[in-house]
Figure (tube, helix red, strand yellow):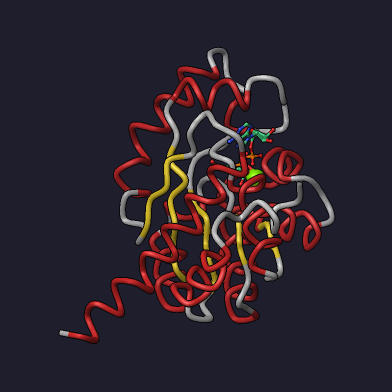
Length: 199
Ligand SMILES: Nc1ncnc2c1ncn2[C@@H]1O[C@H](COP(=O)(O)OP(=O)(O)OP(=O)(O)O)[C@@H](O)[C@H]1O
Ligand SMILES: O=C(O)C1=C[C@@H](O)[C@@H](O)[C@H](O)C1
Ligand SMILES: [Mg+2]
């Protein structure tokens, strides 16, 4: 079954689009939250372009995120991340999955607030660890105890991710189920608007 067929009730897709109201949907959250996996499903279902900021950075820099960190350091990576963000957000609407640290930068949060709807894909430590432990591509997790590092990042970043306009639990269920939760959260915005305009 493809994502469009699996998007639940027929009206859900339309309601989700109404809630998004032509804005970019910006997915934020830690490494392993499912920003890429869920983002692609959501984009496919809503017929919107899918963009991954890490991939855009890699294309612009002609090297991997890991290589960028090693050769130029994190500050240079963050500067490039903001430049890429400015361009992407101006080109929308699209579903944009961000690098795990992008929303932590207040400059990026301000850019997102202006042209997009932010959504935090929230997951617990065990779920995240289970998803990231096999791949060695994440420079921030190249530490002696990567699970502990992930926990420290959670403690530091979760209060900031909580500033996102919407939060969806990236639970340990089928990706299509999380994707539907994303659509429902967007649809909820359209319903609330209806309520407000009646008031
Ligand atoms: N609901 C889910 N059920 C099972 N596996 C999942 C689910 N969501 C994501 N995954 C898997 O977990 C792994 C990490 O997900 P993904 O790459 O989408 O995370 P991410 O938030 O984009 O991480 P990063 O910030 O490192 O890019 C992938 O292998 C993905 O297929
Ligand atoms: O959480 C982070 O700060 C990062 C996450 C990745 O997506 C990459 O953007 C990079 O490895 C940094
Ligand atoms: Mg990703």
